[in-house]
Structures are given as C-alpha cells and as structure tokens.
Amino acid sequence: MDQRRVLLAVVLSLAVVVIYNEWITRTRPVPPVTESAPAPPMSGTTLAPTAPAAPTEPAPGAPGKYGNLSFELHDHPPIVVETDVWRATLTPQGGRLTSLLLKQFRRSVDPASPPLELVETAAGVLPLTVTLGVGQSDAPVLYRTDKSSITLTGGDTGEIVLSGETPAGLALEKRIRFLGNSYLFDVEVLVRGTDAPKTIGIVLPQLEREGLGPSGNATETAVILSQGKLVETPLAGKIEELKSQQATDARWVGFSVPFFAGALVATGPTGAIASVEPVGSRPIVRLEQAVTSTATSFKVFMGPKSKEILADAGFDLSRLLDFGWFWFIAIPMLNALRWLHRLTSNYGIDIILLTGLVRVATLPLTLKSFRSMKDMQKVQPQLKRLQEQYKDDQAKLQKEMMELYRRHGVNPFSGCLPMILQIPIFVGLYNALLHAIELRHAPFALWITDLSAPERLMVAGIGIPVMTILMGGTMLVQQWLTPQQGDPMQRQMMMIMPVVFTFMFFNFPSGLVLYWLVSNLLGIAQQYAMLGTPK
Image (cartoon, rainbow, N blue to C red; front, side, top):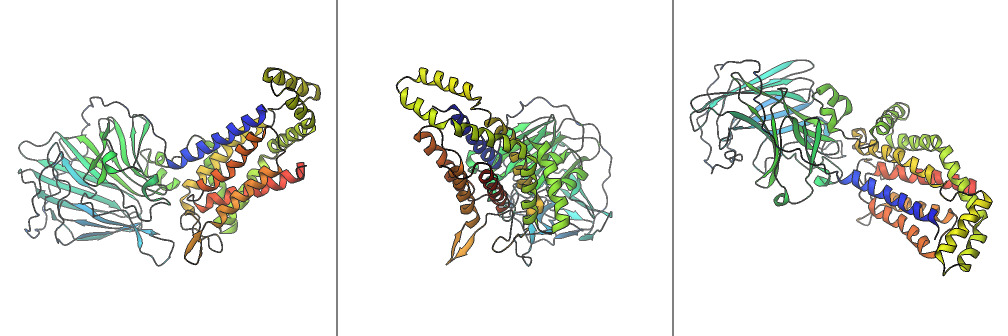
C-alpha cells in the first residue's frame, strides 16, 4: 500500500471536513449557570410628562414564563425614527419595534427591491419587549409617547420617551435613544410601584430571514458572549428541537447570520444573564439584569456585520464576525480584497487576482510537492514490480519499499507537508470570502449577479450551476494529471473527491466557487508545466 496516497486522502478529507464545518456551524460547550451578582447602579433618570394616547386596550392573553410576549397588535399610530442608516417603526403597544429597514441594503439583488427588513411581525414576539421578573412583560402595555417621530442625521441624538402602566399597577418608563449614524441604540427601563421586579430583561426574536443570507436560516446561530467565551447555538433544526440555554456574566446575546446580526448588550460590567429559548414558533434571546435604583439600561445592535461598524460599536461585538481558527490569515486576505477593489471596482476580478497572489505566495510549497511527485514517478516501475512480487506478504513489501525509497533518495511523504501547510491559507481565504459583506449583491459578469449567492444559469426555466460544474471538471483534470500511484482501489477513492466537492459546492456562494475554480486552473497550469501529461 502506498502510504503517500493514504496520507493525501486523509489531508483532502480533512479539508472537506474543515470547510463543511466552517460553513454550517461549530458547536461549543455552554458555560454552566452560576449565581450572578447584582448589576451596579446606572445613570439616573426621572419620569417625564408625556402626551396622552388613545385608551384602546389590547386583547388579553394567557401569561407564560415571562408573561405573554406575543399580544396581538392593534391599530395604534406608529412612532417613526429616521436616521442615516435605518427607518425604525415602533408601536405604542409595548414600545416595541414592528419594523427596522436598513437603508443601505436591499432585500434582493434588484436595485429597485425594498430596503432590507430585520423585524418579522408574523410570529408575534417583537424586539424590545421588556420582561419584568417572572410572569410579566410590557407587551400588553399601551404606552403614552412624548413624540410621534424623530429624524436624525450624522452625530445627532434623539430620544423617544414612553410611559405606561402594567395590569398589575407598575408604572413603567421606557426611554429609547438613537444616534443618527449608528446601528447601536440605548434602551432604559424604569419601574416604580409595589412589588416591583428584582430583574428586568429585554427580548430579541429571531431576525427576519428573507434576504439575510445565502442559505436561509441554515447558517443562523444564537450567540452569547459570556465570561469572554462565545457560546453558539445553531438554529438550523426545528423549533421544538431547540433546547433553552442560559449563561451568566454575559456581555451580550444575539442572533447572527452571514452578513447581519442583532444583539442585546449589557451595560453593567457583571451580572447579566443571557438566555436562548423557544417561544411559540420562533426562538428568542433575552438579556436580564438586576433592577437598580435608577434606570436599568441596555444597548441594542441591529445591522450589518461589517468589520469597521462592529469595531466602532464596541462591547466586543466584533466577535460576531467570526473568521474561524485561521482568523490571522482571513483578516489580511479580506484587507487585500478591499485594496484590490480600489483598482478594479469588480469583486469577481478581485477574487481572481487574490487567488493568483495566493498561488504565487505558495509557489515554493507547490514546487516542492511537484518535485516529490516527479521523484516518485521515477521509481514507479520498480515499485509496481515489488507490489506484484510481494503481494501476499505485506510486511516484506513495506520493508522493500522503504529500501527502494532509501536507495533513490525518495521521501514518499515529502510532497504531503507542503499541502498540509497550505490548508490554513486556503481555509483562511475561504472564511474571508464567506464573511465579506462587500460580496453581498456584488455582481461579477454574465449570469453571476451576486457573489454571495449560489450561481445559476437559467436554461428553459432550469437553473444550472455552470461554474460549479466547471470547478468539479477542473478537479478531475488535476487528478488525471497527477501521477497514478497506489492500488486501483485508492485511485478510485481519489477520483471520488471531485464529485464530493462538486455536490458540496452547489449551494455555496459563487464567490467561493470562483476562487476554487481559478485556483484549480492555476494549479493545472503549474502541474502541466512541471509534470506534463501522465504516461
């Protein structure tokens, strides 16, 4: 048996596992729940006079674990907030978001499509619902508001003040503070009355899924940053299969898809409890803090997972942009992609150029691997004679093979090390392309109009993944050019790899397929120049 081919198969299989694992999700253990300390006092606020609102009462609902979080919405005049980055609509019933449109992003690749929506109202649970201890929420509360709309630009700040009363007689004030050019805003909650809750929480349901990512909710996760560690809960399964999770000393909790995220941020240094749980037909995340003598404060982020935007938001939200194990390679690759875009203005061309630069950078490793293949070619006739001569004595065959390699100065494993060293580079570049929001709705050429989505050429109403099929074909060519070594069963197994990769890449973003296709073409050129055609 040719150990080199076995190791090569292992390396390729490892590459498949790593890429598939990076694309779907990585499950991490959940930190144990521990008793949390009370949150420290926060900046004070007082109840402010507010304008009266219509006394329409929402329909009552049966209380759940946190009260009824999904009261039916009634026809109340909305509160509209316009900023440079979004158009937010709040309902006086519960002071919750019914819409959050991102002005700089569209729902589809069509420039005339509506702005991207992050809030889904169909499930009933709305963002910014406040939980008041156990058994109450402000979802049924009809708030009075001090203004019906605000418009902010640049560094302007504006505040919506909502006042109301729960059925249990608690006086509530909810202050929501916006900044004209930021995706981060503040929510402060003040509760007064007998039997006031000891904890106050804020709820964020799963993001509106249409248009958020290349594969629906298959890549959506609930994420908690707790005690410096990320806890990820994949949401690809059925809602009834989702198990509630909780973490203490949480910094933030939220939902993450490839290009966008929503997160609830604790303002106190310690003591927040974050949870992920199913409520009705959708998962929710909740962040709970101890009630202070003043307002209990939260921050909320809802927007794109841009490296610069997340860094400016602070609170370690940049960790929502997870470049995987090889982040130290992925980030420079992403920066190089952006730099190239200044020259070409076409991200498809940028990917081609970046792939070429990677091939040039790894050329010494590639040449070393090819030299090892040529050395192995020289001893193939003798190796085959040994395999036939000692086919019934594997121990003797291995001994004679090692002696043959020693006499000719051939190391059967020397060609594998360069390939192993290239895996971090390939995976790092893969992650850079996978998470680059710049590729969302970025056109390349011909039928490829969105490098973040799978490519399909429509022929008679049927979508054909032309570039993916070409990618698989180039892998077959590479296998054909590779010197045939090992027994027939091993060679058949190696020929299966292009088929596996082709099917796996069917629903990958076209930017990733383009990278792999170009890398294969350059590899074929290098391989042909060094080894020629197989004999």
